[in-house]
Length: 330
Image (tube, helix red, strand yellow):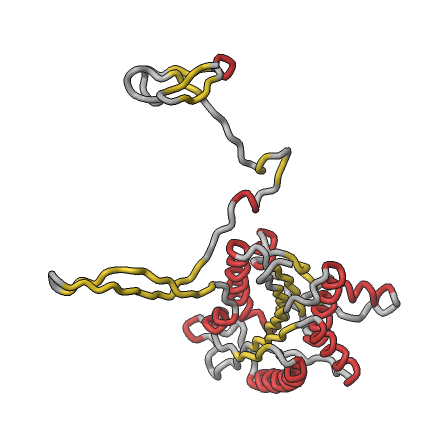
């Protein structure tokens, strides 16, 4: 595999209690995928939405064939592990609708299973992978027995998976007597919940984070980040490489003294890939790209754009080769 390859698995919670975060999250992920598409074409991304109304994952299909269709529901694999592109950007602008069920343990299992199957098919075991789960963890997860938990942790270690947890705020409690003030109820209070519900969601978040901290401690790689606003999200997803650049110059002091100095500056490099590596070949040519040549008999005054120039058909051209002092036909 290519040196410096990065494999990102994004596990995004889209349940109904995450709706007030999804606009910001999708915007950040869009910019992240766009930067990967333009500047890191060798990198790969997988995107999984859990808490969705629909279900689309291989584990659910396998369980359904075994007679257990109610396993791993509300989890949709939007993109398998591959280089991000235009399709990735499109799906990040149209995330699936949310449901009332969002089990991060099932979603984590689907993500690890996706990595295992991709590694078996393409020999990716030795490449480090980052699995980022984004949620406010306000929905209860199923209980996990110790044997299953240890099996998941062993699989993550074997696949060199780094677990990164991004925890967002639960829906805020509606302030008392705020409804109807200045007609802002729909705009401001749309994603607010009652005080009792807010306390319940916060308690559920704490329970889920304790479970994740135990898994994270045994995996041994990654981090858990509490994010309060969109600026914190930008700090999670970074793509620019920063290095130092040196410029040699002469520093003049007065009219008689000159000192040779070196100026160092930190710069960020973002390279655009060449067109030829990004266009599909059709009949030996670049898709949607054509070339044409026109030949002119140039007059004595002016050049090819002058009024004296005349177009010449390709069939009328004579073969010639360059010699010292001009051209010779042959």
